[in-house]
Length: 235
Image (tube, rainbow, N blue to C red; front, side, top):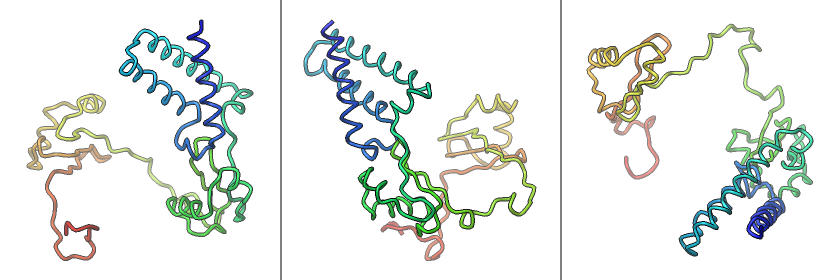
């Protein structure tokens, strides 16, 4: 029983500490997701240092159960606001929310850096920027500064098609061939027409028009062409 209580105490204490640390520290993950990974990793590594495998397995099992319970509870609207931190507004209608920045402990230069990464250089053009509970920043530009959409121009566009990979890293993806109701013979016939070999192909995808796009190991050299400049010393 003492083992059970200790696991619960460690889990709850770690959760509180991470919540106090703030959303920036747990970017990409919710607080208890990160805590689950940290605690479970530490528990699993304990037998290497202590040699008590049985107790470590019990701790790990309790931790997994607690995590599953928290995930299930987070599906309920009333408990979600308790388990997840609320989004924090950083910019609203072009105005920077200094209280929001102070709350998430983000300096101005970091905010501007995050906006540049997302392609925004002027805060005045942003309708709202929010730090989500995962630590990510969501940005919605003002309507006059957002990219033009086909509906804006009343254009009818074709349905989006996702190229289907058939070869990746010189390995045939048979389940995608089966999905397309094609077989290995068809693929080899197509490769023969294009004078390609499976072992030389990095990526081959099935296109909307029924043809193959192939990217092989061959690299086209563009010596001294400024449009093909590559940063670094390998020029």
